[in-house]
Image 1 (cartoon, rainbow, N blue to C red):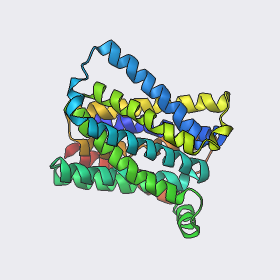
Image 2 (image 1 turned 30 degrees about the vertical axis):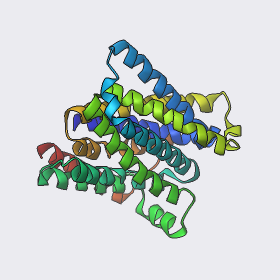
Image 3 (image 1 turned 45 degrees about the horizontal axis):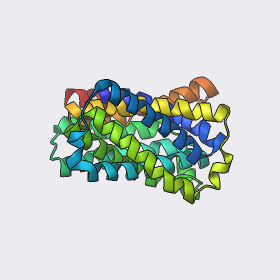
Length: 282
């Protein structure tokens, strides 16, 4: 669970910086810059560790699947952050944990305790409440604001990507697994870059690029701690704990932009704390 919470910290920071970068240099440019940084860092870590890539041989198909789905997930998520308000995108995005946990139970046969599953469900509901104003969320859904459907698609894709990354880490170790995932992901961005090269015209070297690299570094913290936790524990538990990442974006929004907390967010904080306690006990 601790590794999941550390992953939440990284992904919450990545969401905050990613939203800023996407509005400056475009969603695709921001995500490619961050993921190239991530792949480069993992290459250095792999070389320094001296770990063998042999365990990846039997699961290359899984690596390719993870790379393609993860690339699609990041691209759609950053597009949602570029187009829509975080108040709508973040709570929907947190739903990826439901998809990932379900896959871990069905495919890997994981059997978290009933208490842990209840705690995970309460925490996810709490995150949805704490990361938005319900009135704004309802208005966004009713009026189908830009970014709504992008965020729903991204949530499903991230659930699949998180599950497959955890599976790879268990079978090959987190360093070879994460390195392969990052490299496969960058390769999958090449056809996206060609297909949407018009959007890349917004890409400029400047403040937006540096913010995108900050988002990439924060995301790297998230995936490293997630993969480490998944290698030695239940993928479902790490996924559930990591779903609290929107809390970080909310805290930063309050601290940086002076946003006010609405009543449902107070209720969400209570539910998140309760859910995490049950998850830990379970």
